[in-house]
Image (cartoon, rainbow, N blue to C red; front, top):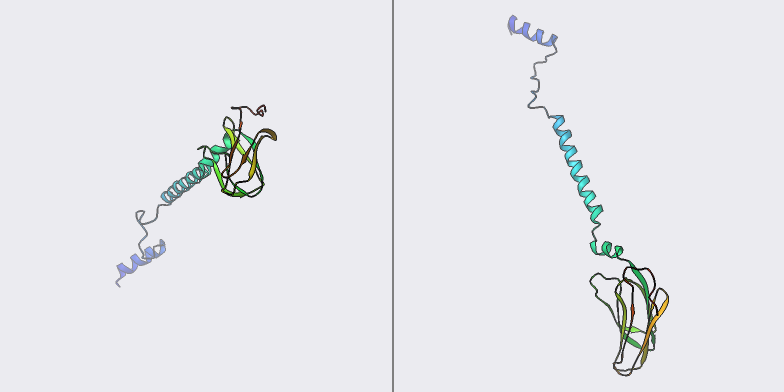
Length: 169
């Protein structure tokens, strides 16, 4: 190394340059860009989380809760078994069917106001006798009896529209 090169190395060392090239701004990660990208990612995650909370994942159950209902008790007395069909809380209006239910049988459910509370019984080929009854908010509304082979009976009770009062018996 000649004197000129030595002078340059000593001058650079005095200025803090170790001979390695400093990173140019193009090579150094842009911290502001990383912070912005992180913020955008966090905002997206928050929106997705908010969507899950708002949606709840179960639209049917949520919409059924908003519909005013009345407590309805269905009761079937007798001996043996019977097929029982009854109306419960359902936006689609589909009935619930219980095949060969052991008697006596009793079920309390919520039924949307404005719909009819309905329970139907069908006896089997052995026949017999069974009685259905409907009570709305603890108040007896109707009863009927099925008898004989494949005997049938249906009990209904009207629920008021949009009112919280029990229907008259």
